[in-house]
Length: 450
Ligand SMILES: Cc1cc2nc3c(=O)[nH]c(=O)nc-3n(C[C@H](O)[C@H](O)[C@H](O)COP(=O)(O)OP(=O)(O)OC[C@H]3O[C@@H](n4cnc5c(N)ncnc54)[C@H](O)[C@@H]3O)c2cc1C
Image (cartoon, rainbow, N blue to C red; front, side, top):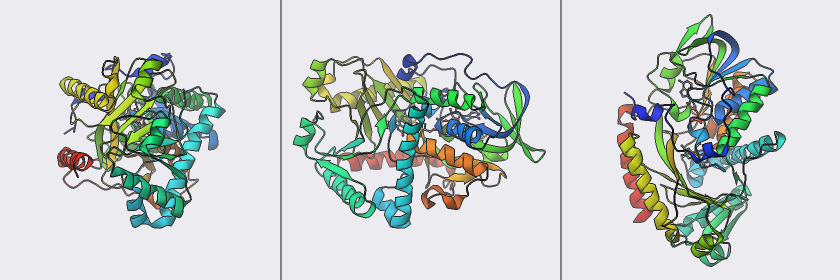
């Protein structure tokens, strides 16, 4: 039984996504798969992970690769996220990572996150893609006075144990930086990361992968996968793709009841969680000054149910939040009201500002780690997913890593332990949304009261 209403998977449904107003979509950029085709590698999923995997296979391994995407390219999280290209990718906090994996492995994992940011920057530079980038690092804002202690502890750990510099800011210093609001009591800048227009990045990847020889097929939902002739046969409504090796990078947009071992291997192991974004009309200089927010630094607060926000180069303000339990049209409407309430509470002087764009999508949680590696019980099949709501950057680097692994150039032991999985099944998977409800209640209480 699907966890969310089928409304969520309807690829032809408009989602009110602001990024679509910033690009011209070329109708023949990625045509649907038709008839019987062959490739050495099949990639399922046309987001950052799949597109980076296809590009890496075509450029670095000279491989014959075909990618199948259910919707238009970037239909999933990659074409609709907040565009924070920053560190992250595990649901564990820094201290938790150190406790479980030790300093060396935590450092390896953090190093990967830094390289992931550089990877995206290098791609944009090399391919001359103007993805409206801005922000020099990321700013974490204490939503309560006591939350500053957590930021100070993390900063000390990053500095001492890992040699990564973090700058702490008092409330007064934040105000001088153009970062003011009734819920900001101090902050910490990590000097890594930047913000981008995620759809421009996605389309840039698509063009680069095609130029390198990868075949990219949109509107080609894989409806079953069978083992055939020692490889895989992937079936869509209009065609079939035979491939020797398979890379499944469907992330939270996976329909896990579809027939075939690669689908079964992921069944009950992922928890899609809703995240929503709004974008205002361009703000005037007076409106920014009235709020005291003039900074273009990408920012988020210290809540577990976090809010993330940034003033974009065109003067529009983007604001995102987690929450929501379903995706029917009524739920979408209620989610729209909730995100506006949060936005106006945190930025009260903008409560009259028009908000023409609100949309939501799924981020992908797992019960533990985010694995890059072979899919259990499905030979010659690999996956990379479950970045826990975060990874423009890590999704991209993990796409490269899973491609290298499928091509036999690296093995799991070349990756930090944090990225090796395994992807555990949730206990009683049909209760996943109940666990989520309980987690939301607990985090909500911890964020606001404890
Ligand atoms: C609203 C929102 C805001 C976010 N903000 C940020 C942010 O600011 N920074 C950040 O780092 N991360 C953010 N994220 C998370 C980030 O977008 C994802 O982690 C990342 O895009 C994952 O990329 P992906 O390629 O693994 O998955 P996706 O982009 O989800 O791609 C998977 C694709 O697989 C396709 N697919 C599924 N099943 C099939 C099938 N059977 N056949 C063919 N194709 C199939 C889907 O259609 C989908 O397009 C956000 C996510 C959301 C939803």
